[in-house]
Length: 431
Image (cartoon, helix red, strand yellow):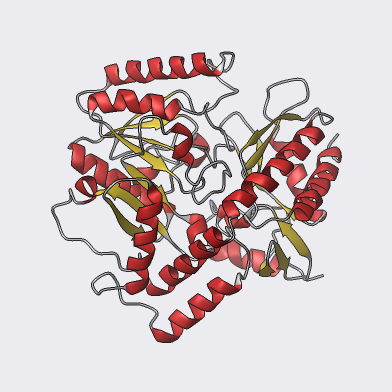
């Protein structure tokens, strides 16, 4: 077995202490194929986290690697100062899929940068630095995005360029609204939104919300809640930013975008995306109607956003996703996996709840018989699953411990069953 200590020691010597690593003995992943990855010792793992929901279709997908190789053989970089065919092609496809009328697309290198751009657009368009965000939310690691992150574990400073008001409603089964049925929950959350707006000074710029919260533990409101919010926002001229960094591209199975579960009052004004579209390549972006996108009155470029190589990867990856109906696969295989997990959870007292949609599932762990979070149990299950050949993710708010499951969308039924069996053994190991 390879000793990971020297590499770990080098990591700690030159990289920040706050740069998180999974596992007591961190592993080095060396290559992948399909839904599997291998570490430096040659151990094979079924990947149920996809590089934090980034490997969307499959590891080493031939169509994507070919597109990257061919584009790199022509030209790797030019910047947005020159016409860029792959960028225009991907923008055309994303604009058409977004559901936003008269859409314009701006590419970045990450979801953080995409949300930064959305905040810049919204605050400029509305001439206001006031933002509505959801409790338990996560929107990135930059100075502006941590200031709208409602999850203290991922917001290292209270200093902010924005005035942020946090709204109820993104967590269905915890908090003061949890006892209500869906209709009453939505009504109470709308009432809270109205109350928060009464505290704001003048015109709020935007509400930013994840349709399903990612880092927060795959929590979500009842369908239609953000549509109900939109009715209030429209009365005040407030923009709606849908953060689709984790929910986009059909991962939820039922919809291509998470906002479509809340569409009764139309699409968002601004949509942000990243992660899965590049299948591991560094792509983020913003879609907005032209009036909003074009509100900036100064020059701007993107040095690496829209890189010919990453755009070629995005075009090939999106084509594969659509041609192979991976949204439908997420709905079918994800539905089977969720039912299997619910069956397991019924016999494991530490599992408080199984939640999610499509291939986006969360397992909340608590101390049996209570609602008290059990981070030690989550860490133990994560370790046991790895030993069994399965990679998972973690998350949760300040008072929750959640295991996150988000495999590539090409996951097969057999692989879903294999992963569920390993996870069941890992869960039973902590009883």
